[in-house]
Image (cartoon, helix red, strand yellow):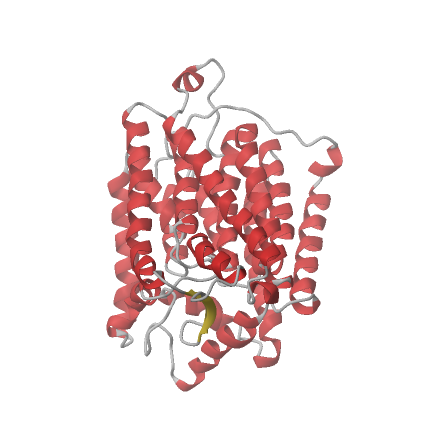
Amino acid sequence: MTRPLPHRAVPQQLVLHGPILHIPIVLWGAFVLVHLVIVWLALFGPGNALGDIAVVYRGWAEGLRTGTIMGITTPFVYPVLAMVPIGTALILGDALYLYTWFLLVTVLDALAFFVLVRRLRPHRVVAAWWWLGFQLLLGPVALARIDSITVPVAIIGLLWLGSRPFWGTTLLVLATWVKIWPAAALAALFVVWPQRWRMLLLAAGISVAIVGLAVVLGSGANVLSFVTAQTSRGIQIEAPVAGIWMWLTALRVPGSSLYYDTEILTFQVAGPGVAVVSAFMTPLMAVMAAVVLLLGVRATRSGAAFVTVFSPLVLALTTTLIAFNKVGSPQFISWLAAPVILGLVWHGAGWRTPAVLALMLAALTQIIYPYLYDGMLVADPALVLVLSVRNLLEFVLLGWAVRELWSYDRRSEASPGSRVSANG
């Protein structure tokens, strides 16, 4: 795992006009400002963006004092390592739980931002500004969910794959044991990296160690309870597939409605065919992910370079986990930051389209949640339309990534001067 990954890329540079945008104090000043604005919106803005942290996460954290450890002593909706940041945020006490959480997330974001901009290379600076804009457009959920822990860790892991594959892979595995979505990057790495078996051995070793420790602590099957907790869920109102019943409810068609699931703590759709479609969605998502992986295999066997295939494959797999998921939480959009940043760093202007699409998805998501979410709960037609456009753009983004996998240009890889370090 010590050899750098093979890399070649097309150097299409995105350039930020104005030297002031490349000055470290300006970059870091913008970082601080964006995080302060988002924290202010979460704490004092309209809507309720803090329910998960203030009620659910803090409740789980407080359970540690009485010996209740989610994923160990009781089933858990997330992988067991999610309790590490959730519990850590209690270190300064109950009264400061929210502020400690935001501090923890901001520190992780700062580490990822440092890795991104420390050498001030133009394409990395562009990616850094894009990330700040993406977070600002996404709003409170960019910092106020467990996903906020995994995104910066995944960003560092992906950026390190070019020069520190051991540590990059390790971070991706650890992030997966906090929230499952970074497994998309690991799956893509297994498909396109020549030393895939070393990666698999490392990932398996870390996972066995985590499961083994949990079992020693008395978890039993609870350590894997997050798998069944997700598959048994109904269809959440923001999921793309929920659009059918959202429109039926918005148009007041009898038999369709929305309800709150008190066990999963989410709003879901009810109506004819919901149970059947809900049971079908997880297998469908697995099949679509397999199809995307096969496209990666096809491109790799046809001679495509690692950098050519890896970044669009990660984006395609990540978007598949969003678009074909029966769960549609707004924070899922935050996952897109990691593959888009990787694409901007490795491919520059060639990733302008997915970068713009991701910004649009973030903005539409913030409109829906948290500010106008009450309208969603009564299926207001205007908000259902906004949600439908947002969900449609997820498939547009997926289509772009799939097209890149299908129609990569091998001639551009071999053109003079086209070799660019994957280290950025």
